[in-house]
Length: 275
Image 1 (cartoon, rainbow, N blue to C red):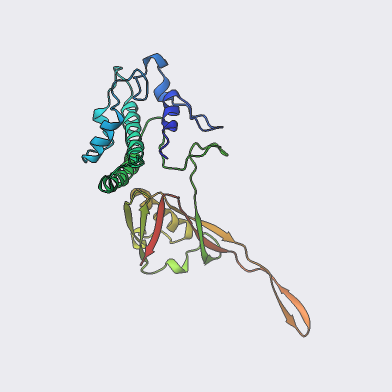
Image 2: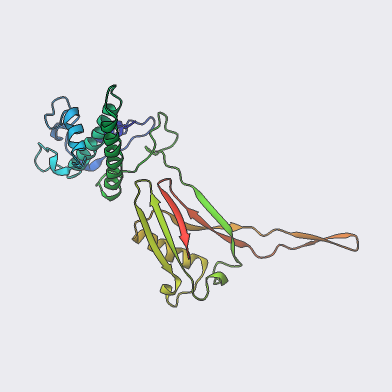
């Protein structure tokens, strides 16, 4: 189901998700009487009819177009056009789905509707990934009837912990990172886009290849490539060891702590590594 209620909540200054409230200072600085007429308003004449949205989409037209949005308040924030364009795109997806569910639609039209819906969904994902707003951060997520946190959108963050990669103090260089070390990281997003970054530790120059320095180097490149996944570290505490000598149990002191890498992923990216 395509759910536009979140955008409607943003326009009025609050999220409609239970237990969550988002203030949009940049959009509500003026009184509500000075806000542009929203396309979902009953008084709006700019929103095309459902049949027009479907016809335009099947004709290959982009479902998100800021230039098609009418702003009837002079000097209004540029965010309005972006929100209105996104709303129209989501409404187009809704109407494509509604049309496909109509009894009697031919198999060829159903196939075309499915194709345009898939392309439109990818277009929405690309738009959300590339669009910035002054007072709102848009992310793809799962609509929920109950909010259990302060976030308006549910997003899973899968973390992956490697085996121990370093033993000893964090100020010491990591033996596994010495010499020629290079690898590639690819992130396939839910919209089908794939981003890649090549990591070569020689680019660190003379900086010591400690665990923290390497993590910082990798994360800087991930951010520059537009990848949301990040690296971190996790301590693996050393444990005491016991052995039996002449029938007596002897406890040996714990050795140095070990450290593992943590891949802090997101639900919108599938990460792969290659040497």
